[in-house]
Length: 226
Length: 280
Image (cartoon, rainbow over all chains, first blue to last red; front, side, top):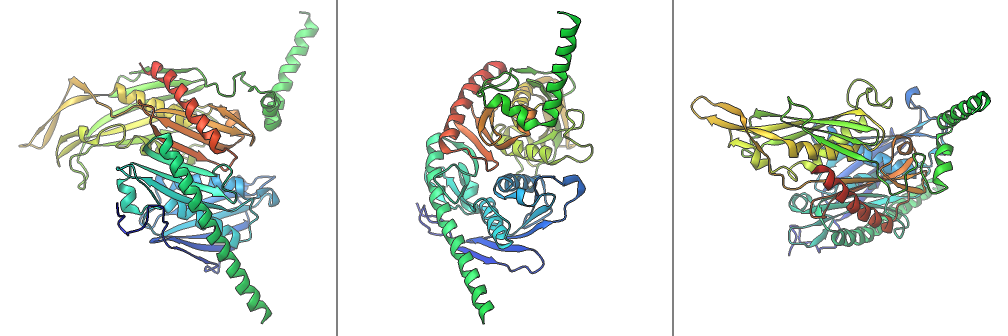
């Protein structure tokens, strides 16, 4: 069965990443999966409101804005999911009584937006030099009506899918998943197959992230020595 | 028991309460490290769950659910509304979770907080289109449809929002009786006959089960409020009548591996059997 953009079933879309494009934030990253593009800007550690101040750790805040329209409860849901993921991954004990604010703006949405948001947030946190326990990469799978499983579905495929699975993994994908969101009508067997496919895709994304960071650092090193 | 013993036991109780307040993590660890929980439950034991349908006579469908000390009431009002232009044959279900200061000191008065908004959205994703067939809510295509407004109000909160909300909404939808509606094309008025109500035919029922990783190490089922405060990861598993999966939602990057999630799904199956009996 051919996919709308003629990709293989296990093929993710073109990955693109740009670090440090925003000058006012502490760190930023733009992450793209094909036509899905998400921009993330991170402030941290910065001043925190007295109400949110924690004596032994930093307060983590996530703001998620959709590409079109005002934020709704749908975006609140994504904020909560992203926040709970990074709350355990940021070494917040190193910066007590401060705030780390993750701002995510969707520039273009064509499926797998949640995964792109998590990936953009990871890269922006690294760019901001916020200490992390590990990086995390997310990937999406869809089980179509035919039972076929495709990786990194675009919006058209996602709308017709019987179930959608977004999973995020830390550096070592052999340990448990950092985040799981499987929705629709599926069996444990389908879930397991999606799990394996997402783990493989997440590894590819992690490798891509590492090479993007390496190239940025080597460019900066060259600039500083000239 | 002498006066001296009563005074001493009173002091012991006071000391335990103070310890629980001042060192909540240590307090829980005393129990969890011994393989039990502060409520005396086992790690995979859910609290006693009671479901009562039809508790609000003024609503078209309603239910009250108690999971331990968490009490929630769900009321569904059916109103006639114009359909969306893009879906002229479909009615809709709007879900709203209300967590007010009345149910717990965690929640502030005013606009819905994050927990309420996230829960409302998650219920919408679980139930919208899946459980109620939107086509069955149509009165007259393009003119009039039923808009079901489900309000899930927590009266007492002791952990586990989503399980309670999903069970309450499922029960209220089963209880729902829609008045027989007729559309008069001449006047454009819908007349509803309350005495001739009909139940909705639901596509499926949803059975939830929540598991929390407390203190980064202990996976417990149906965490109460004290345990929830210390959770580093939470897994929600939702099954339908046939045991097929509707949702696996793991949030919080605490360490829950693949095998553990499989066990959670199995335990959710056991919980489903108990809930199905309660929903009868």
